[in-house]
Amino acid sequence: MATNDELAKIFGEMAEILEITGANRFRVNAHARVARVLKDMTIDVASLVDDPKALTEIDGIGDASAKKIIEYVRTGKVKEHQQLLKEIPAGLLDVLKIPGLGPKTVKLLWEQADVTSITTLKKAIDSGDLEDLPRMGAKTIQNIKDSIAFVAKSSRRVRLGQALPVAEAIVELLRDVSGTKQVQYAGSLRRGLETIGDIDILATTTKPAELAEAFRTMEDVSKVLAAGETKSSIRLKTGMQVDLRIVDDAVFGAALAYFTGSKQHNVVMRERAIKKKLRLNEYGLFPDDGIDEPPQKRGIRPVAAKTEESIFKRLGLPWIPPEIREDRGEFNISKDSPPALIELADIKAELHTHTTDSDGHMTIDQLGEAAKTWGFHTVAVTDHSKSSAQANGLSEDRLRAQIDAVHEANERVKGITILAGSEVDILSDGRLDYDDDLLAELDIVIASPHVALRQPTEKCTARLLQAIRHPLVHILGHPTGRMINAREGLHPDINALVEAAAEYNTALELNANFYRLDLRDIHVKAAVDAGALVSINTDAHATDQFDQMRLGVLTARRGWLTANSCINTWTRQKLLKWLNAKK
DNA sequence: GCCGTTTTCGGCCCGACTGTTTTCAGTCG
Image (cartoon, rainbow, N blue to C red):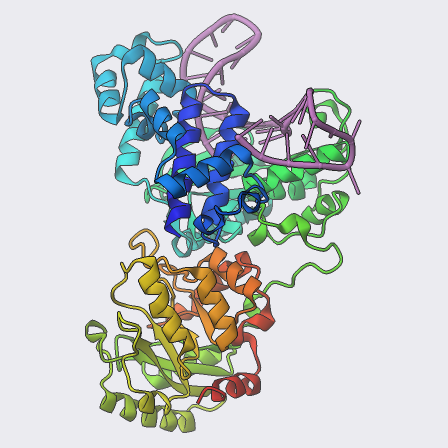
């Protein structure tokens, strides 16, 4: 979906430039919203340009944006975007990305100190030119210096699987501080986003000063960024930022909803409140009496605050799971029958693992025993195929020997079914790495792309479709091959894949490894909408990696997946029947 | 620039913290 990404970038840049040049802030927001909508779409926006009505029917895209989208698809550029780019030096957009510097300050730096890039900003700081500017004291200048150094060192968002254990450790630590009542992480982490910008933690306590102090003096803190009465903010030595909010126990629900976000979801929540003559903030849902001063400061009692449920209910909504609070349709779900999103406890089988026969670190028996401790009824051995030489992929003879070994292990390891399978490479032309005769001997076949991960959309879509349509393939493994923060991977036409998957009864894998999470959330949603089956697997190479299943489940929930559409939740009988239908 | 269970025009979400000010602008989430 290259067009969507390109256009999202263009609209994002337009929003940023408009912000710096001081345009109407609602116009700025409108552009930023179009960028977000385009990024979230799985349909190629280029396929809609022949029908302008289809474009403007999308929430957030009006006549003006539709015209620009059509212009881009037809001509490869947007005139207004080009004109805006000429209005500011290109390097100024990098300056805007420095934490603490917003559009107002960037404009000031540019107009009054000739700052046009991070390089010229550094020079301006060193020369002392900034000191004469309004609101530029020694502390502000030092903060800018620190932020530049920070951005240069680590501007990346942290992967979910790395942030989650850190947050859990901090929550545990704070829970043990005297006076603490409730502690929970919120923000993008609670929503299960694939990467996390910073960790938000919410707490209630009878001793706020002690809790804040304990937080700011934790072992791995490198810098205290803020130290207020209710908000503390720190940076860890790893570069991750963590915010702690201390709130009153009686308004924990309101605060939790507020700090869980997403920002877009919250905006819609507050707008809904206003329509009902109410006012929503992190202290609760209040009657709106038209007075500007915040109601909680005037002693007005909220109509809902203690729990998230009470707030949703008062706004005429069911409790919405955090993972789908993205303003991607969650406000349309039925109050009486909200979707029953999949849960970790629903998972009864792990269908993608590697043993010491290829590049894994566990034997078949160890794999079986480990899977049992997770309460699974079935686990599949799916080592790499011969082309994956770097991963010690199995030759035909070695695979045949492994099939026998799996059957023998099944006799030894009681209480679980171990399947003989393979993660067979999808070669660059769409053929599989083993002949059909051998694949037919396996209990389960996962076909995955490992090479040629830069193929253009058309070519890789055809390649993956060939695998989906193959009569012996059960699961398309990690369909895009992306590695979060490291490798783009393929950009196939996801809608074509999910439709074919539904038609050919082939499951699409949601690989739960925290580097992959592939399918990603919006791809899962596309699969759900198309009625395709999904298989969540850890791709475990060692017994301690089964734990990553929860990351896969979080991502699946973000894609609105329910248990019955996930083959890993099925009973052994149902699963084996489905697998055998393809032999 | 977008949108409509009071609207095709007139609105468009809310509060904490910092660093600078001497009552508040700017940024962030």
